[in-house]
Image (cartoon, rainbow, N blue to C red):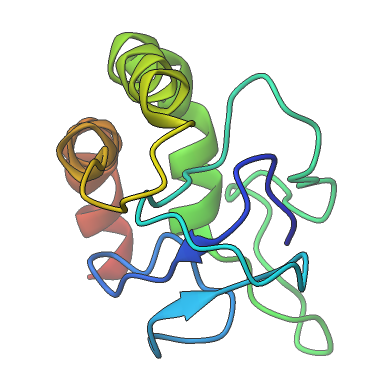
Length: 129
């Protein structure tokens, strides 16, 4: 996964960013520049292609891989969380020139994913039972 912001923080809280597991920071560009700001998928970017996601009402056949309903539900919930996403992206723009590494947008990042999770949870839990 590439990012216009450089490094990605890999976090296990909901495993939203799964690049490289939960081992810490990943540099998808190989440039070796550090930014402590995690990067969620943007509603407005095209680097996350989910053409492989199908509607969960179509159950997988025995020879097909099961459908990850959480990913499908996350995609359907993201439009409801535009404000936290815009807050996060505004924060990233504000701190882009910080070379000290002391500024970050972790709070806005978690606000965004908390919004998505709050929307997903009541819809996902009944499907897991």
